[in-house]
Amino acid sequence: MQRLIIISSFVFALVPNAFAETMTAKQIEEELIGRTLCITAKAGVVCARHKAGGTSEIVSGLEKQKGTWKLKGNKLCVTWEKIRAGKEGCAGYDKTKNAFSSPSFGKITVK
Image (cartoon, rainbow, N blue to C red):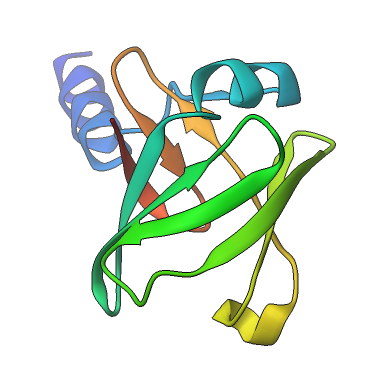
């Protein structure tokens, strides 16, 4: 029994988002829209803000550019001027008690 507890503890330590809740479109809109979201990308830390009116902007870490966003199902979809050659990209988001993450981007710092 003790061995099972030790193994279980090790497995959960390796999977920090094991208890993450997948955010709904409503939760994404209420908790992420209007705030600055920062991710660590190949270019370094990149921060973007998705505004309530459906517009987006890169605010730091890359050449500043504008874009648009919309919700599709439980995903936030963004089309940037230059990123992905202007093609839309969609990502789901997860939330634990004190943190946000995305399977597409990893840990997200929200300001």
